[in-house]
Length: 293
Image (cartoon, rainbow, N blue to C red; front, side, top):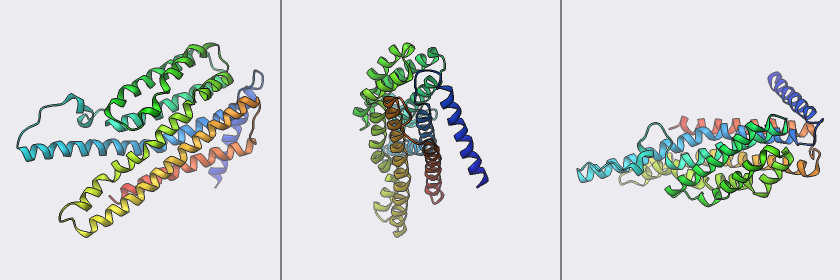
């Protein structure tokens, strides 16, 4: 209890200091951007083990398919560079790569906006925005593997490229307006949310195949039902976190448009604590998912 209280006081103090730092210049919604940044960080931390699991699972599934084909044909299949991501031990599987890059873009965007609002040099932020445009382009290159979320990422590259041209002379509020006009955060969050059904299929597919295979023991169906229930909890928590991130962004947009904070200072502090608690719950649900494997 004491640790939690200390953490909240520390968060409140940091928010207050950031707010005072911005008071002497044109208005920037520092506190709201802090909430947005904390929301993104919490969501990304919670998402990391889930994406790790998706990557490991999709690799294992594809490797099993190839191994079964070779076993049945008694022939070694030729090496296919197009499937390198499934067999490499130094990279994510194709679907996980798209999901992780989406989170990386969101992370960099939140970091750059907070840095800009708190008065850091614009050169670094301009370079970072340029990196976001490059990252968005890399996302589009990966879409060729047939990931269903591809269309939602299409708006990223031109919008981020435009931001990179203007950031060196833009105030934080102006950049926020550009990001909002391009629907960057909304589209990115929507893309990641729309990916969760594919994640669900990937994370339950092996258990489903075991349960439906010829001669499967009765407990295989019980295991499938248990795993699907737990995966549902993990992904539901993940979706809630993503939507909280979008809500935090909306708070920053409203504050920038109003040129003043639109939310109670204490309420913002509480929201940060809630986001962190939700991220912890998601990590715990994921640990519970694999504990019974």
